[in-house]
Length: 157
Image 1: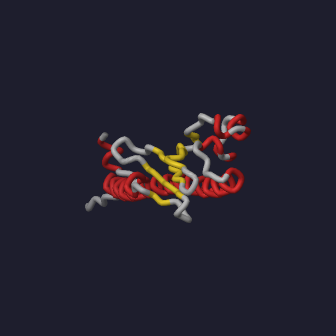
Image 2 (image 1 turned 45 degrees about the horizontal axis):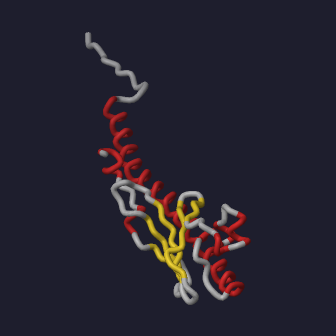
């Protein structure tokens, strides 16, 4: 008499489970850095938008005062001290943090200004810095590599 062996087909084998885990790990190693880089770019675009606002406010300040503002506190969108708007010459507010980035005026005169926005994202990378000036129409990113997320640094540091 011949014995028939029957195998149960319910569930997953260990090999099938390991294949699914490996595929998931590969997808996650691509998706997580891409997502983090996307989030950092969104935050950077918010800073660029604020620099455009600062540019408009600097031009308005020039029209009203025949010179550019010397401190960031003289601009309405970056003001945390109402006395600065009343008397810009007495304003000592040199930096202002909006969400993730710090804003400050690097230099200003009667004919030129340069406003910067900075954020340190990763300890191993340069500081992310955007600038806008009287001679530029749009913000410029100075450190392109400051936003790059490294999964290897994240895992092994």
